[in-house]
Image (cartoon, rainbow, N blue to C red; front, side):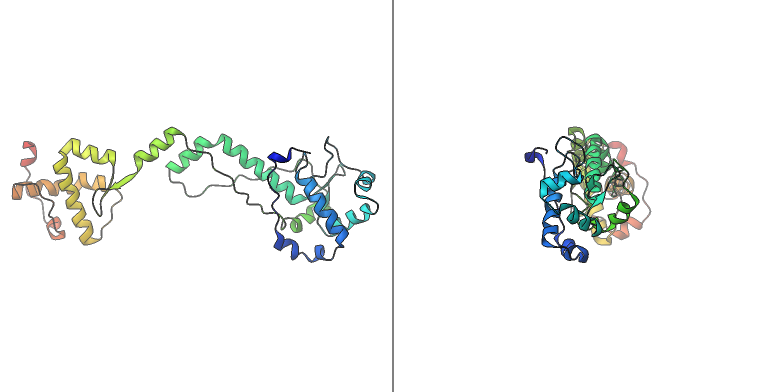
Length: 271
């Protein structure tokens, strides 16, 4: 068996088990055998398959020797109750446990290889992540086993939680760079955007432009996709119009003022 220290606890849906009428009709001996076999299949070298520690399927005689006389009849009852399936090589297995392990392995591999891809998706604000389809079973089950999978699927959850890979330092820097801060009640900018406004127009002018946009958005309830681009657009024009009209920097602007045509601007060139 595999080292138990690195084997996670076995998930089991108690509600599905108790509501399985076929399973509830089994004898206590049959239920006890199945529980023991589930544990063996969970720690098996091929999870979900009843194999020897060194590999290879158990024969009926070997299972009889392992669990005692009458084991063959109990196993037949478990198969009839759709709790066990028989693989082409004769190995007993639980179809849903095999599927669950296949999904876990696939997700784990995708997590190791997809760290950069995951980071790009986060930065691009992709909301939906397409789940990777499970790999095929290592052996093709018999037609009878295929029909039994539906009943077995209720006993183990398919959706196993997987921790996403951590973001790289570069991805974390990009996220931090894209973070927006409130420079007024209704105006948000990144640090770089605010720095660009201060560099191009001066800090006092940048604050006055932010004040103009803040007053307008607060009074009209208007929203913009980018406050930065809005400031560089009509807000900047309104700021210089105020400079020409009042001869001073001001952020006091009403919605009515914004609708008026802008006067010819000449003061900007003197800044």
